[in-house]
Image 1 (cartoon, rainbow, N blue to C red):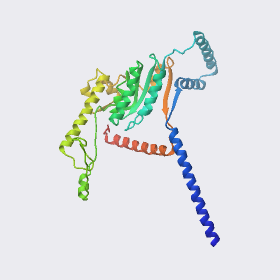
Image 2 (cartoon, helix red, strand yellow):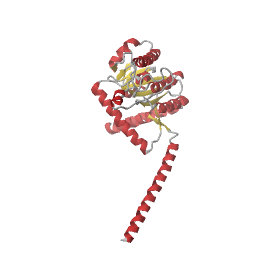
Image 3 (tube, rainbow, N blue to C red):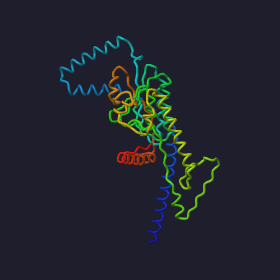
Length: 340
């Protein structure tokens, strides 16, 4: 029995030591990964080549041997003519960016890198297509995102934005920057409004004899509070601040789309694409896929994406966040209330 006791004690110590070593190694690897994540990776893929591959595969399945032989002969002739004409380096290009915005607009960090990369290589004959999807979020985040898109126009490069699903509130703040704004027929467009809300637990605290103290310097340092007792003066100041932001929002949209009747559309409402076109919120009813095909093969088309590798903890966190966001969107679709 004593032997078994000693052996069990030794085994417990060994397991503890191994676990400690694993934790230390994991911490070191995690720190190294975090250092590596300081820099992301830029990916540029040829959508033109992808479309060529799709076309080639479809023809190989659908055409008979005689038709394929005739087509191959014609392609060989066309390629020979292109080589004789010289290099195609001066052919116009289209760069495609995907932006799917969340409530906190953290995707703007990736957008900044993608826009910078494009501006380093693009010419004025080129074009940028942004496939945008966002229901809006924080004011400062989407304000910065819109400014990133303005950089493209400021360089004299054509900016086209396509909305296949939704561009509302902060999403529309970004979308209205476009030289040409496209929308799918049933995409949600608009919601030019501002919303702010917070709970107040002051009555609950008083009911349970819990005191709350808050000390500020400055008359309006804190207009409304979650735990303290709010005043009518604080509420009025808070409303003024929201209204000021709404005015700035309207002025910005009007500066980008001068023909728009801003007072007609800046009510916080949103509309499907067809109605949004009637109101002047968008320019054309078309999906991003149709637009890409409309410029192919005249333009060389490239997808530009900046990505940062995430560790396991971050991936799990993003998974939970994604589930939560889908739940919110599900609640919205049921209540028909948009969260700005």
